[in-house]
Each structure stands twice: as structure tokens, then as C-alpha cells.
Length: 489
Image: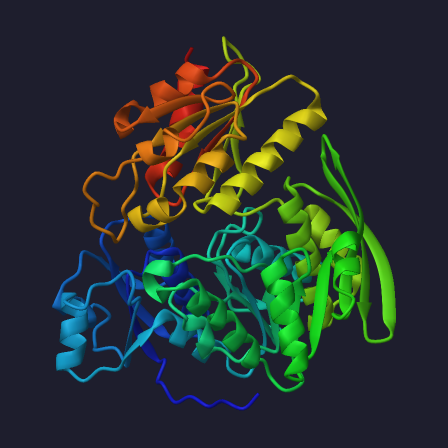
């Protein structure tokens, strides 16, 4: 694809460089020989890793940080959602007439000239992108990639590859995915979210339709047939002349005969070692059936693996080689991430996991996967969840749905709402969730004191249980503390 862009990327300054998205593009820039500088509000492991790779990083935001690399940058990169407009580095960039672009604009620049595989959807973007990258690497390809989470096996969230493919997440939260021109656009699912930005469900759905229209003339839109809104998008895209391929279970394939099938999940079985999956891949005149054992639990992860398999085939890899990579996939940081098992003492056999789930559908999927896992082990273990709601607007919008999803746990501790970019809403606490959970079926604790959360979780845990911390905020800090607390009993 010919380049349409003219931004000078020789010296790039990233505000919020330690974030998962920013740190990823920083690594790619360093791999391409750019001078990279940036700042973050705090020191962190990603910041230190970037410094060791050659980036110039300042802790704290100050106007003089623009010259931390010895001269002014050619462009400044920011996140409009996370970085306020009065940030001193942004103000200094405007005063000095330095171009300011969003991270998504930078990513689009970096992808120019590559075969672009973009993965979008309300849920599953990071896991599906990660599976695609891992599968392609197993197939002997070296794609560039930018992922919203860190691959467990590779230990990184981004890479400047030698191949012609670029694999990345396409974030819909601020409509920035419309800045891309994908050759392959995968849409895992569509469910109302980020209504604080879009204002209505209709506007949120529309951004995915518009994204499908951004696909190149000879490109593909790949949709999940198990999701009604993604399937509807696929059917509408076909009517507009876009090439569409579906993936999903055999039942979903039968429900949508109007959509050509690229990957059909013909069998899946939950085992103690993982989920055995069989997929029939059909692209053009070629058809091939492959099998693998997926180590990451959950029916939603099986669907994500089928999407990754199909995306990999459309990128040019062989199904059997991709399947081997999916079988070797060990996950992503904060996606059903295993933190450890208590070896001895009162809570011997108790396991602790952490997950990023922060939407009711994600919470339901993760807890369902946890229940299937303990059922397959036939150990009699219970599922204990420690959940931190993320954003007041999301909690208010989905309080009933959160309560229903959390009811899948045997015991649940709900922490106070993590407001992130939002200011507190008077009279709104996590009690709007816990008050809706039936205590006759699920043991419930509302814990507003974050410092007491570990002891509260331990108090509802029994030996051998599976404990999950869940949420997009600070709850992730508790997983290791809970594990240590259980070990010390």
C-alpha cells in the first residue's frame, strides 16, 4: 500500500509513555531507529524497560521534558482520553508549533506499507490479537505487532518485525479505529459500551459499520457468527459489496447461511489440561481441518482462537502451523493470568488468577470459564471473585448485569468503584451491585476499604478454591497479596 502520510517520525515524544498502548508504539519506533522520548506520571517496569532500550524518559510532566533527548521532537504523541489538554508538555508543543497526534494516528503511520490485520470488538481484542501474533510466529512469520497487553511467552506488547504483516488492536472507545485502512478487519463482537463518549447505542454500533467500510478493496471483514450484532454487521457489509467471512460454532454457522464461512468450530471439549478444539478452515477453494488444545479456558477464548486462526490464514500462513501456535499459546497478562497455587498450610491447593474483565459480558465469560475449569477437575473447588467496578457511568448503566454475572461465583467481594477519569457521583457506590446479588446462592461482601480487601477475600475463601481478581483498575495489585496471605495461613 502506498503511503498517504507525511508526519516526520525521526524524533518522537510520547506523553504517558509507560501506558500499555504508548509503550508498545515506543518499542516499535526504537526498533525502526527513531529517537524516542517521553514522560509518565510515575516510574514503572515498562518505563525502565524502555530506558534500557534507548528511550529518554522523564517521570512527571513538565514543559522542559520536550528536550530531554537533546533537541525538540518532530512530533508529540498523546492520548486525548487520558491526557488533559492543559498538560504542560502539550501546551509547550502548541507554543513551539510541534505537531501533536493521537497514538492511533501514530500507529496508522507505523502500519503504512504493511499488510494490516486489525482486530476490533467490544470484548476480546487483546486476547485475539495476541493469539494471532503467537500463531503467526509459530508458523515462521515475523509480523510487527502492537497489543494492549503483554504476551506471557514473549514478554512484550509490541515488536518491529521483519515480515510484511502488521497485527494490531483497533480501539473503538474514541472512534480512533476509523483512522486505519485494514486489509483484514476482525470483529469479535459488538455490545454497547463507552456510552459516555458515543452518547447512544446506535452511535456505538455505527462506528463498527464505518470501520468495515475502511477495509481495502481486496480486503476481508471477518465477523463472529456467535455474536448477533457482529453477524448483522457482516450481512450488511456483504450487501455493500465488501468481502466477508464468518467464524463460529457449527450451530451459529447454520443460523447465518447468508454469510460465507471461513472457520467453523466443529468440536470442543473441556479437559483438565485445557479445551480440545477442532476447526474447519475454508478460504477460497481450500479447506482444511485442524485440532489443538487451547490452554486458556473459556468458550469465548475458543471463539477468539478461531478468529486468530482465520486471520492467520488470510495473512498467508498454513492452518496446521497456526494450530500448533494456538496450542502453545500461554496467554496475556491480565487475561485469566495464573499467579500461583498455595503449596502448604491451611489453604493448600488454592489457586489465584487475575483478569482484566470490567464489562458484564466479560465478567460472565471469565466466571463461566472458571466454573468449567473446576468442574473438569472434579475437585469440588468453589469460585471466589474479587471485583472492582470500573467507571461510575459503566456501573450505573450495567448494575443489574454486573450483579447477574457476579452471581456465577460461589463467593464475591465487590470493592468500591474505580473512577479512573471520572469524578465520583454522589450517592453511587458498589452497593448498587451487591444489593442486587441473591445472598441465598452467592456469598456477598461489599468492601469499600481497599486496604482491607485481602483479608476480606481470605475470609470467604476455602482450601482448594479458585480465586479471581477482576477489573480494569487497581484490583490487579491484590492478586499476589491474596496469594501471599493465603500462603501465610
